[in-house]
Length: 51
Image (cartoon, rainbow, N blue to C red; front, side, top):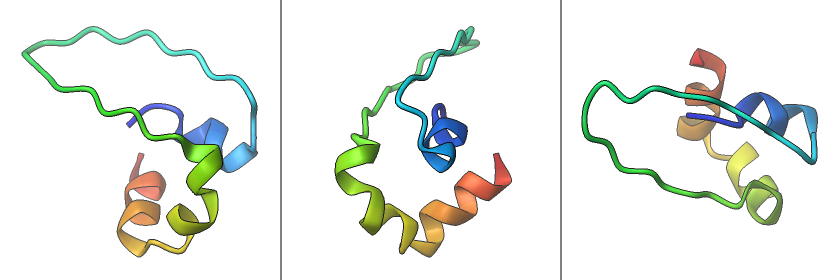
């Protein structure tokens, strides 16, 4: 997961560099539009805390 620190800090910008070691799929999730729902989702918040 990328961008979780910026999401929790309410930062308007994020940047990341990654190197994929195998094939992967990327899923874009618009944090700002879904903030309330995401912060009430225990599964999502567990993943944020783990990372």
